[in-house]
Length: 290
Ligand code: IPE
Ligand code: IPE
Ligand code: MG
Ligand code: MG
Ligand code: MG
Picture 1: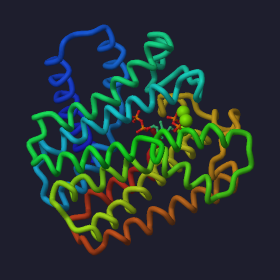
Picture 2 (picture 1 turned 30 degrees about the vertical axis):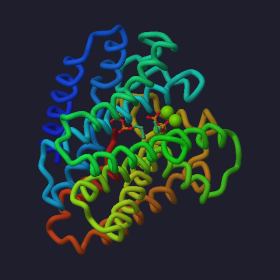
Picture 3 (picture 1 turned 180 degrees about the horizontal axis):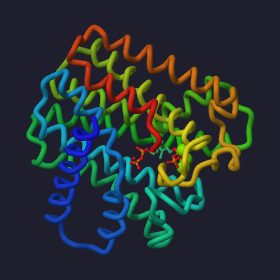
């Protein structure tokens, strides 16, 4: 698992650096690169690779689609740390982008990373027919806007210091984090022109993997080491974030995550040994400390 994810991370970074290098140079490239290359896990690309291997998708196509996903993810983190959002100063063990470059530059670098994802997916680098490319762009757009990341981040902020039901917390976590994971799970099926029913199944699996990922992130915030996580921990409680932990306690949340992981792996059983990589990633997500 560790070797595979390191290779995926390296190949993704090589592609992104080459793509950016071909563009005309601007002063936003430095803060964009800072947010993009400062050492993320590239877990979303790993999921793309895991599902891609179930459906025999070409590795290089997956790296390029993953590169677009990582741009959107990097943008979402830059904005997440802004003073008007979570107001966090440390990300991936380094000063957050707005601390290093200033707030307005961080906003604009974030915007530029978001649009860079669409530039990549619509470019000639993605050697797929136009209809498939269009379907990928359509799906990733929906996962990033008001029905996805942005909408979920809005809920996250509006739920601060409020008593919120479990259903609403889960909806918020699925939007802010699950939707992009869902894109990673369906992109290989979109590439392979799979039928609607199977696409629906992988959409759901992706939403739940993302939910599991966010719940694990919340668990790390509660009990994890700030040094290992590369960001300050114990901050959700201070900010009055509505999480499953704030609603039902740490132990019940661990049980919730374990059940989610168990059910997810069960739903993959019909793919036999082909689902081994994805199951391994699901275990990693639950037991990670960063
Ligand atoms: C952090 O995401 C934000 C959440 C959605 C919980 P990651 O934990 O994937 O961040 P990096 O890219 O590895 O730093
Ligand atoms: C962020 O969730 C989710 C995003 C979509 C960016 P968090 O606010 O919990 O992420 P961290 O803990 O700051 O990385
Ligand atoms: Mg946040
Ligand atoms: Mg945050
Ligand atoms: Mg967090």
